Image (cartoon, rainbow, N blue to C red; front, side, top):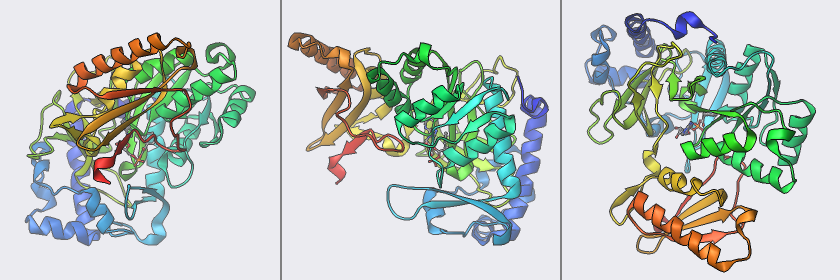
Length: 430
Ligand code: DLL
């Protein structure tokens, strides 16, 4: 099923030609209206007409999240303030957020891309779509909401709310699709378990869109098993509208990135050299249709690769592989590079492991992993727990090359916040 078949299946040469045309328009726009970019282009002695091929894109300047903080609140605005109709921000861990403005056309376009993404995963107007992400400055609420409305779904703006209320809405309105943080999906599953409910029989959810935080294939499978539904990975970032940048289609084998809206590059984050499809590096994105706030070559710090083969669905927009993690989340422990996702992959392969875990680094690179078990795993037999602990330690050692300390803790004992999960506490940097 397609939302906009003509755009989604453009022949590659046509698509690439369109990208160059849109890029040149974007360059004209920022040169005329955004002093920040005018200056950067002048420093490099670049005219929009100099970028005639996609290979020449690498001559353009990068934009970093530090740049966005430095121009806060509105230094990249390319329209009059009166033409901006919406603001979203992305909160960093410290200091000022990054503020992103949308014109009316930008808002419509963001909804259009969500509609494409949802329909590619089989959502129709008949679906009841419960949006369990936060409404407010975070894009997971409003941006997704208007896209699902555009498809014609009955959209329930549930927000993050309590599990009790989520469940009531799901049952009373017979929700068929949810938009949910993967960490919250696991938490919600344990809530249902405590209530004695069986999600497969007692709920009508058949599709779940999960994103906004890194998660593993094991976590996807687990959510699918618990709810008896199809789970689709969805990627986006506030700087590029929020969700709707890339999403999995019915084949669930990588996320189609809407290349007629975003120019995609994968680079070596150290040398800044471009990498070919299939190789893992940092994702760099340029907006191609943004009116209010175009952004050139944004360094996402997200680590992924392009799936080299075309997709069976017929869409020609290339797919991103599941994210390895954020460059900023990579831990260096005793000289070894470790992504939290490697730990998650191991943990989620154990059925006894529950919904939550926490990675703690302290002292001289001492790694402790606190792991919640399912209530059923605490069977009162100490030797069972010790054996499980050893198995987890060994499997982790094989994956991350160092031997962590593993603490098995009861379900519900690790902290949970309302938003994205915090998986790492690095006390070395405190
Ligand atoms: O998280 C937008 C979004 C909302 C995406 C709902 C998907 C669904 P930010 O808060 O700006 O925006 O955070 C963006 O989250 O740079 C990634 O590091 C991470 N991220 C988002 N989706 C995924 C994903 C929204 N599917 C940052 N897999 C990005 C891994 C993801 N990481």
